[in-house]
Length: 236
Ligand code: GEK
Image 1 (tube, helix red, strand yellow):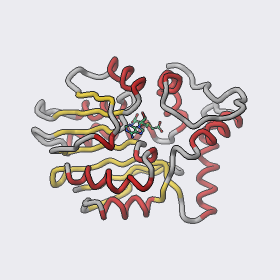
Image 2 (cartoon, rainbow, N blue to C red; image 1 turned 90 degrees about the vertical axis):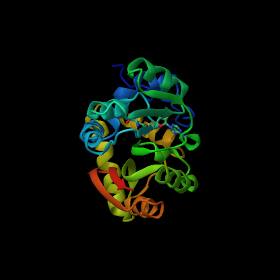
Image 3 (cartoon, rainbow, N blue to C red; image 1 turned 135 degrees about the vertical axis):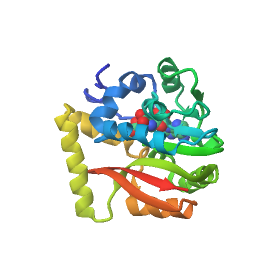
C-alpha cells in the first residue's frame, strides 16, 4: 500500500482537493489514517448485505472509490440474483477499482447525481454525500428513497458537525489527534484541511436525520460514531 505523503511538503497555494491519480495511488492508506472507524464500518456492511439484500434487487455503492464497501457487501450476498452496482465520478478511481472488483459487479464512471436507482434493497453512501453541494443533497436522497424497495436500507456515513461550538471544536481536535497518532504531521493536517475546506461540507446528525425522514425514509438511526465521523441507517 503506497503511503499518503501528498501534503508533507509546504505548498505555496493549496488547491482544492480532487480525487485524481495522486490521491488514487495512496487512497487506501489515506482513508485508513484519516477516517476513524473506516474499517469497522466496512466490516458491518457484510452482515447488512446478508440480512437486507433481497432476490432480484439491486445494491448500489455510490461514490465507491476503490470498491472497499462494494467488496464488503459482496461478501454478505448469498443470492446470485442480487446485482451489485458501483459508481464513482473519478476516472482514475474507477480504473483502479476495475482491477480489484469481481467482473459480476457493474462498475460505472458516473456522477451519482445522474445515476438511476431502481429496485434497490441496499444503497451505500459511505463518505460521499459530504462532497455533494448542500442544496443538491435533498434531491439526491429523494431519488434514492424513490428507487428503494419497502424495507430497503440506506447506509449513510458522513463526517459530521456539531451545533454546540465547544463540542464541535473538541471533536475536530480529537480527530486531529487521531491523525497525529497515525503519523500525519501538523503541516499535513493543516494543508489537507485547507484543501478540503470548500469541498467536504459536514452537517449535523440532526440535519441528516431530518433530511432522511423528509426524503421518504420511515426510520433513521445512527449506528456508529467516533468523534466527528458517523454512520446512519435509514429504512424505507
Ligand atoms: C469507500 N465509499 O471506500 N459522483 C460520484 N462519485 C463522487 C461524487 C459524485 N458527485 N463526488 C465524490 N465522489 C468509499 C469512500 S471517498 C471518501 C468514498 C473520502 C466520489 C469521489 O470520487 C471519491 O472516490 C468518493 O466519492 C469519496 O467506502 O475520500 O473521504
